[in-house]
Length: 229
Picture (cartoon, rainbow, N blue to C red):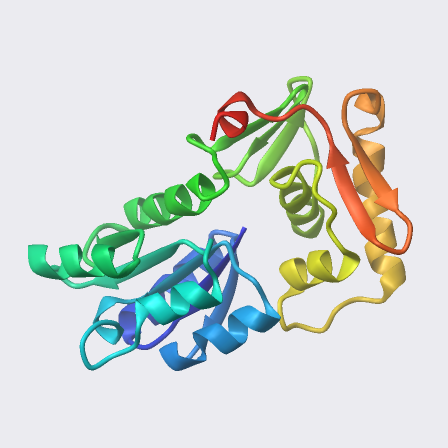
């Protein structure tokens, strides 16, 4: 999953660096005012911003919600008051987190908000014989861990989180690379071919279907908690 961090103070800059060092995909903007513009180019699974940038005299969470209605928003504040938390939640934030909590807890809270937006109650995504551990960023097939590079893992995770949905090549590349230079199209084809090879032993249950000229679909059994979400 990709996280967009508005690095408007040192706390958010440090948080963005910590998330990146954990192997997560992180996009950064220096100004909260640039969030909507960045999201139009690189969609995210979670927006992380400074609580003080929103509210009276600041930016409007309501307007941001109109830009990305389904985007979960986590606001960070130093020792937030009960009133501040209540106002932020009422304005459209999904959670308000105290900036002083330990990094491991902070990462776990943010990951929980992001995955629940995809209908997942736990860190594991079960697709029949395939289990994806979103926290460890690993996947296992029939109980054996797959040896996936970070890019191929991201490709699998993105598709598996959207079972049955048609996903364009551009959407996949944008998610994996953000605003970085995208690879030659042949490199992406190698990634996809490698991922399919990993899944070939269960191709009767799980597959990545190509809709020529349109994109790709992940075909496989949905997780029970997702179907109920």
